[in-house]
Length: 573
Image (cartoon, rainbow, N blue to C red):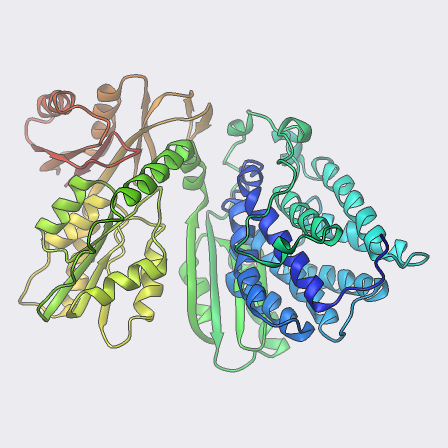
């Protein structure tokens, strides 16, 4: 089969197929992430980026300009993580060329690949070779070479993708950290996964490729062994991380940034961090930076417009959180099963009477949900560390609360920004997001609420109360690793505190007690233990007796939380 040109309909089909293939293989790509450059989960970030565009593409007409606009704007607005932003810029550069033509021939395709690479490199302050950029550049150079004496798009793209794989296989020779971990670059792998999906659609007449909602199947994910994936990644040190917070946000511009303003803003970001990606469009700017001062980046961005999609991740903590990924997957499956069981149950009624103040809280576990309801929460959203609710989930809960002021308790650092985004969409209601990072912080915040204070005063006192609580969460390791100077073996019990791992051991109650010892001090008065769904009551009682013996000056309480993943959640006040 020979193919001399592509129209808008074919471009749509290829793009959607690429998105589906990336979505299908995202977990494999996630496993290629290498510490100490943990820019989130690469597969998840790239998938979220491309899906944002693919949904828009699937709904637009077979018009080249409309398709290109959906690809460019959808990927930029949905971009997440360093790899996602770079992917969005590759797509943006590609569409800058393609949108000017009704049909794409080999020459236009070559030009669009070149513009894609140029745009992506320009967006990254200090481009590194051995990354997704290198793989994209290799394919761009190859397609330019092939187009000198060939015009069959199918043949050209097949050889280009084959060469892209060759460049990807050489990335460990360009970045020592990849070679140490025994993996190829995860961003480059994500790009090749999308390219292979698009190529499969180009070779097929299957109409399923045209529908983003359709199930799209390709060959199985490449084996970890074929790319040299190693179980030794946990040994990579975190000491090389100079800037600890991965910071992202969108600036909704009041007016387009001038080139001078853009360069000045990039220079400011460079002065406070690294791994900078700053992309300015007509009405928005996408920002990504690793820094020790996220607030400074936000403040500088506010000079140009309002901020949205703000996200700050502690990259050292991300390494620790990967230890419970398997447990997280199990919890998500359990949640899905519970939802199926509840399908026939009537929805919870919204608050029937209008009132001044209402509350929304997020937690996982029937016991914790009952505790929050007992403290006056109107709507409890099921979610937490392993199952983050969406902005839409939180917005629906806000709308169901019949109150002038609605206080939201995310109770997890990964949910705070979604809550803040929902607050912006909530219309006339006065929404106060209390940035609680743990369930005990949320409970303490609720207890501090006082009816005699106005919303601002209550929000301030609730946040202050949340900050006075120390939290420990007890779970288990799913693989061998080392973190913060502690050697951890698969199956070990871990006590994770507000700032990292506090204790590691083989026996649950002993490790939990060691975690409490690391949290409590002479000023501590109350220790509360929330028992998880996998812990027997008598074992929890025995733990509390041990804590009382170790801390006779403290009051010790035991509550049933019913939470998955964590055997115990412990608060110290």
